[in-house]
Image 1 (cartoon, rainbow, N blue to C red):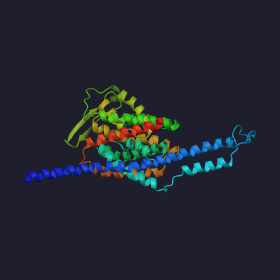
Image 2: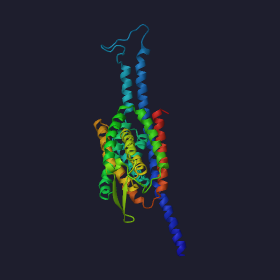
Image 3: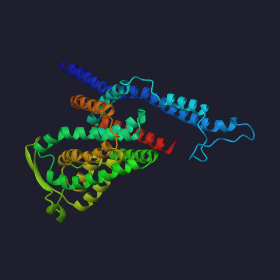
Image 4: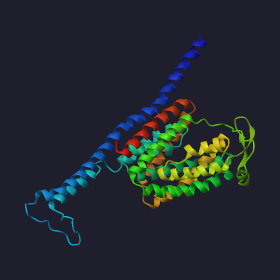
Length: 379
């Protein structure tokens, strides 16, 4: 009887856990559907407004009598004088571009969406910025520049919250982080300036391709807990890229060192440019390079990567802030929602199956990457 009771309890617990895991996914999907419809309505209104302007510009020539000439404005040769029809068309275009929702609708929608996103991000072990930019740009009618600016602040907030604790436990190593941060932060500034200078459809296309590459990387990469480094290279030795940390699970003191340092530093040039250009943060790329290429232990790689984000994303965020691409009504609800979702996600992580959540996030990234790619290509 006791064995049957234990089996029934275990079965009930597994069923409850499955429902608990599926709840945030279903909430995000149900919430994303109406947001996508609203975003499409807003985009359709903008296209109708542009079509009205084009029709109005062609209307005066059609209304002219045969032989009648069009008066030219002084200093504007070749441009027709603004007529009453054009004024009406401009008014219609402005009305089409106006959002009919109250000012608090989109911040609250963003808060709830990012709360669910924070739960999923923690259980999947990925940064919030990597999910924020492709999903918000796909489901909300916000310009990509504002989404990227908010995405950098989202990644920055999480890194600043985790940084002190990681440094106290020696999981984030300053000697490993500072040379990498110098390269990545300088390149992030270049990437941010490049991202704001290029046309939006080009950035959207590159963003979609990058998100698809991240999904493939998450699917194929297998991190090593303690890579074997037989001999440290000269550059790593000169920069002091070595250290020790205490493994809490076993009480063991682990010594580590790096190799292939030059190749790793060169890759951080590309990582910094991509982080600034797309506003994704760079944790998805920092950890594989530090762990698999340079040979740092997994915990040190994760901790150092989180600390790196607080430096790299700050540099890129200043560029977006200086260009007016950071809106408080977007950034604050996003940060608060992801922080609150992360707290809930940490509690659910004890009963969650990380493998299932990881594959679910990969599927979401593939979907959002394909959506961004098609949007950039105009399909």
